[in-house]
Image (cartoon, rainbow over all chains, first blue to last red; front, top):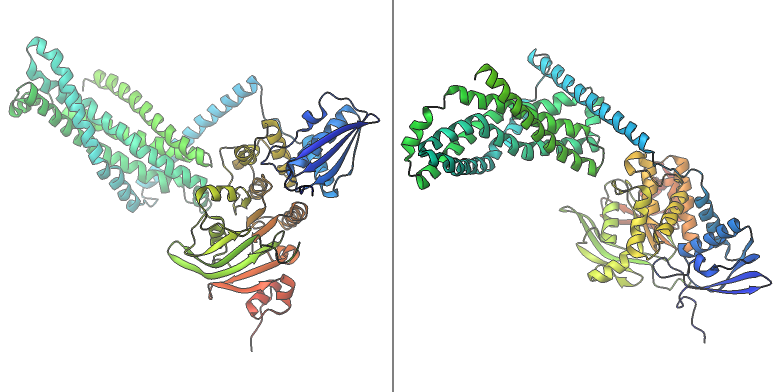
Length: 375
Length: 255
């Protein structure tokens, strides 16, 4: 008894008769098992005609449709007759559809020339710049309406955000600024010990923390922690059409989503920076006591000879600006996010990069300005 | 084919929960091979939950699902993977992978489960897209096409491997009537050509009356099946007036 066609693998037996290539298709054809390819079956033969027929054909699926479709296309290209009348009717129908799908003129070629890419990139950069300006403008309008008392402010949201970006960031800010104080003390001591001026470590850390590192470290922590979260949150709201839902209700997304977040950061950042100053000074004090044998009281008194209110003010002003930068970058990147899962990820990355970049740039500008005005 | 052969799908005593809430209890039915089978019912009765429990996206609280006589519920990981290869699932919103083009979306299952060369996979993907009326959109990303198109692309992906059983979650919701009828025709064509078993969750009465061989109706009060049979027989005289109301789209006044 012969084996049933279901049990046999797919086969395509060929023989040539009167210059016509006779192909007998048999066995069971499935996409997930190896099946004959038309190219291999026909090889280099140049028959005057092709005749396909089913011979003990078992179960078949799209793999056979592809085979027959390829055969028909090959025949058309080689200009030989292709006889598929002896195949199951449905198979012939699907093979025709498959052939048509290969032939379609609609097929889009979406590749561009280099010039087109340059043009597109330029247009994209222009659109980005315009989007940025528009965002700044909207924020300005929303803020002025708020200040003039003509628009409601979502204090409840703002306080929630303050809790998230301020209070909940305390542990990480503590750790990082304490360790910054420690490393500054060690590296300062290397130089100052040469001059016999170990005690000046207190001055170094006092000035460095209050003027620079407190605000900078708090800014960088918040860029990674809060800025990325804002971008991801607003980005997924955008993908979910929540921003559109606000817009059609006539509610400005800037007023509703951006202002509470930016204000929360603008208020929390100076507090976090001052907290970071304290922890940094504490870290320096610990190292000065343990390795340089400077008593904490001496350290404190020495520090107060150089650090005054203006140094603290410099740090606080910077912190406010850094906070606004982190908030604006996060919200802007979130609102600019593409409407898909990858877009949300890109927005978060971009928010962190933008925040840190602008923090460093702003810090440099502050250094120059404060130097000029002698603060 | 004899009526006595093993059913393609057998669900016995299935109880499903949605989060912590039990939505279905003691659901039993079977789907014959090459049958177009509808699961119908109002919104919130657990149609999608039932579907998710059948394909293993959720774990049933109790009961068993068998495919071609083999238990899916108690199968080990390897056996499950082998069974999953024979399913296609078309999600409500399409659930396309947004970082891949339509062509790549359909190519992924083919790359994963077949050893076909890349150009052939691309041609099969183009063929699938043309079957659902999306010829020429191979290189588009899901975010660049409309919701209805995404849905059809999702269907094309579900069909990629010529599955034995295709599950559809609300295939026609959000589609215009003409597209929805074309989709129905495609479903019938697939069944007639490949002998595919089709399970559809839907409340599109035109589809149900047009192409269903049999259906079950779920009900929120009994948390189970209230009617089972062919749409014509049920519309003519189901014991439960709700079923007749649903299928004839008319309210029946009692008393």
